[in-house]
Length: 364
Image (cartoon, rainbow, N blue to C red):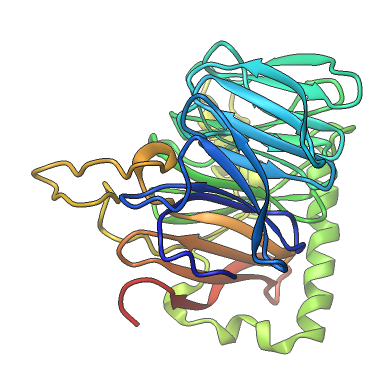
């Protein structure tokens, strides 16, 4: 990858191809913050430039489309030379540049805070999902495009929707206390969800099939546990004993709806007693700079980072390598990546633990 020796506010790769969508940012931006630069890393040059009237917050690429988010709108282009604008859509204030680009659909905030718009790329048909009562904080689309996961600024619940009919098929509880959700990511098989937040925790949930009731998550659990056991047998280096004891999972809850035992079956109790919780969780590292900006201290708030969505360096960004390996990446003064693996213990319970980590910013 090219060393630009200047600020980049947003970057998104096209899978493992040589194209990267870049937006300038920081005190010394490499590119104007109102432009999207499609960089060909093989040729070491910009092959496409898109200019907007306001700051670009995010740009996503597929082999046939470019999706661009600014504060109050989303624009969809054909990935061609020159790019051809397909359509644009108004949104509520979207300071984090939330959007998802699938093979057949795109998803992004609606005109009303808490709503989601789903657009069929081929037909242009628009569907509205009243996902939350407060503004959206995070959203992600499954690799097969059938499931959409959303979280609001409250951060206690993650809601799961079928993209085919916009029905809510599951509701997952991260916790009871409000939190800032950092990232949502769905595994390659579209059966698992990873969630990170400012509670410094990685949660792993089962997901139901988009066409089935929530009971299908139980079937997914058994299939995933069997696959994990087989993977552990093939890759003994990812066994639980290889993880430091301080990084082992502290929450194994295979029967999610029974987290509170018999209390979950009693009527009239608050719903948190019967909600679906993660089947495994593990601590993640987040540094102590809550402002994550150019300068500042707890007593004197820092100045937002120019050209960076939300004005803060991102933390807890989740990605799946496969259905049993998760990477968590964070920026800031102590930027690092962490690798987590899922496994099965002797009684068949699933766990998640940290296998390794490395700083790529700051100290060594």
